[in-house]
Every structure is written in structure tokens, then in C-alpha cells.
Image (cartoon, rainbow, N blue to C red; front, side, top):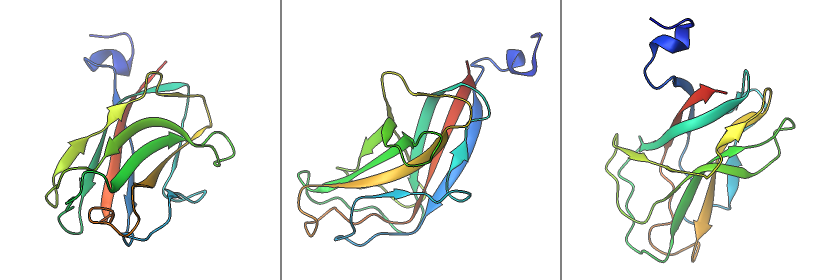
Length: 147
């Protein structure tokens, strides 16, 4: 039995917020998926993101061209909500069935300080009109550990 609530959880990690988003067209510009008070989360204390996932919910995420795809990120947007520091990322270079999760790759130091905004973003890699650049509706999820 741990001396704190988190001491009873083996990894010490708890679930953060879930960021849900609508689909973006193949010519959709790079953008953060956020608005202060919606589709973001403020760190309640100093944290480290320990794992992150993205799940397509609207339709299958088809990626037919490995040179043209979306990069999805969970970002530390800072206390103002405008920053772009990547904490976790996923290159959607392979198809993903609807309601199937794919793990994101963690940054070397995926941390945030008390009050900083954690949000999501998407970037187009390669041609904006090429196959594989459509971002289907989905959910970002992450787990964090207080530090």
C-alpha cells in the first residue's frame, strides 16, 4: 500500500484529458486542435506524459502514399495556449481502421509545468492534395505522471 493515492498505481500514471476532433479535408491547413476552454487540458501540477494514443472514430484512416501523410501531435502550448512544443507524435503513413488505437512516439522530455496547456495538432507532410492527407475524425488520449 502506497503512502499516496498514486503510490497504489504501479506506474504512477493517470489518464489525462481526451481531445476529440472532426475530420479535416485533404487540403486542410496545418492547425492546432484547440481553443481555450475546449479541446485542451491544463496541467494541474508539473507532469510527464508517459504514453499517448490516437484513435480514428469517423471512418477508416486510409494512407495510400508514404510520402504524403498527416503527423499528429500532442503539444505543450505553454501557459498562453499558443506554444507548439511536441510531447508525442504519430506519422499516419499506414492505414488505420476506425475505432482502432495507434500509439504515439514520445518526445525525449514530454513534460509540462503547472498551468500549461496540453493540446493536439495536425500537420500535412508532402502534398496537401495527395493520397493519405485526409485527417478523419478521432480522439487523442494520454496518460501522465506527476513529477
